[in-house]
Image: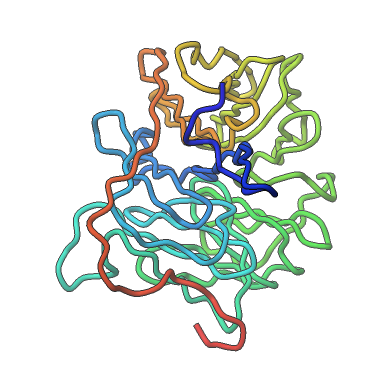
Length: 336
């Protein structure tokens, strides 16, 4: 049965009325990991235009700041207390979480452009170390300002990183830059020329599973699993959320061994978790076993350290409206 909130009236000739189902609203497009690597439950959930839902510490995610972005969010990562959003056709933007310190840094709960260069249309890296690139320029997102690394051997189309190294894909293939004192990128011999995504400096997403860029071996997905989203916790721990038939499933790669478990959401209201409006869009995890899986409709499946699952849903508690600045945006023809 369609709820009243999902219906809109349509005027027709003769004064008669008709009802039309309104398309489901997208509430979440990405998760930014928490500021501490050992607590996935501190992840920040982001809407398509930077609507930021922060964990309240009691199992809920709440939006309390009205700021947003004009560009559409396509990915998110984290550098300490700063969540970073990669957007379509623009530079990254940073959102500071935690407690505000008067006179230090950017305001808590507001988006600020990460300045990389003139008219930067950047891509955001994946992995435990936050990185970004545009053209051949590669940056580590650490501290108050981006740290420029050695220029890539070609135009960067994707990148992934950990504290050990950074890996990029360019039109010349895959190349690695070691983290400690390296000034030159080295081609990764015998690696695929193209991958679906670089998850960090070790793991790449390919058609049939995860490709190990160290051993040059494929770890194939378990039978029947259809991946929706993947997250590298560390070089030896990767989690993936997706579907097995009509049921949502979590697959974990630890070392070189897969394990799998259902995402237990049978009590969740609305569409089946992982299907239709509840399509899985993002996952984060930590080494303690905590996992957060986000669905497009605003629901979050949360796994505790004990292995039990629960369902949360993003909510909004904005302060009263008052005149203020428009959403942060990057404009053609202007300098960052």
